[in-house]
Length: 336
Image 1: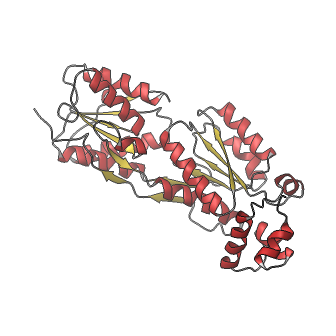
Image 2: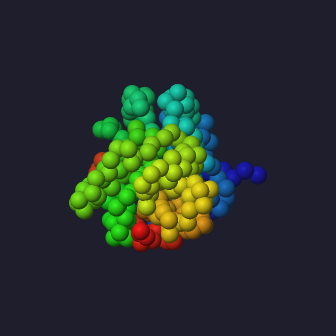
Image 3: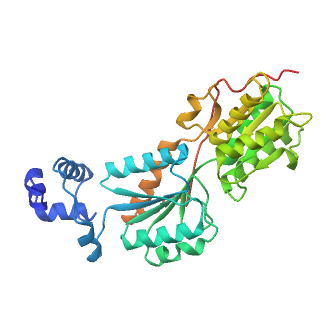
């Protein structure tokens, strides 16, 4: 038989009222005791009725997560981190893949409101921030993950993209590279713009310029774009000796292009990615990349939403985590 709130109360040795307070995030119950009650709920597979909770205006213990493309390993890992932290805190996550299209974003935001989610985590690009107005009007907490969002109603969690771009440039400069090109996804993506800006600043500090012609940007089919852009760059006169790719999928496309052209990595061309997804360690050769703390980002995004739900939303509006250079086998000293 399906477990009831009475079963949870009996098993945990507390009153029904105490279980109800834990479910609704109320009452003066210690954190340790709350966790014990949540563990009993999990052991008994007890789930309060989401529909009934929504109809009575109570918490549904669900969060919405919007990502551009769940097949992208970076966003798959973001989703895993968010789901894992949500599960630990008694929340279910509804994941929507938007393909960066405002029409889909609007449809999913409407759907998630109809499901009475308690909060929203947004990892997709949005051209029209007015789409968030209905959530703001209903005081639904919103946290942006892995990208900046220029709204006073949204807390953001992202890596230091500018600093990450600088790390990539400094690494290639230390290896003696001066003929360098950059591959980016669509430049309306703020993270790509910031990574390029940081890369340019580091080059400028070494007395080098990154011409606009050396920056290739495409759409959202990252593997295909990375391969196509690299084929163009590596077949031109005075080809670059190194490539900085603004995400790992672009870098993997670049590796494919180099192989197709009969070029060796890193002997003929060095390649640096950005993200450090699981794919970066299994490519041939393994990919040098700028690591984002994906697990920490997902955990923090969930914690910020729940803090707002508990009226503890006094955290800074922007949380910037530190990127890290991970050196593998796709970069080496320049050979003339």
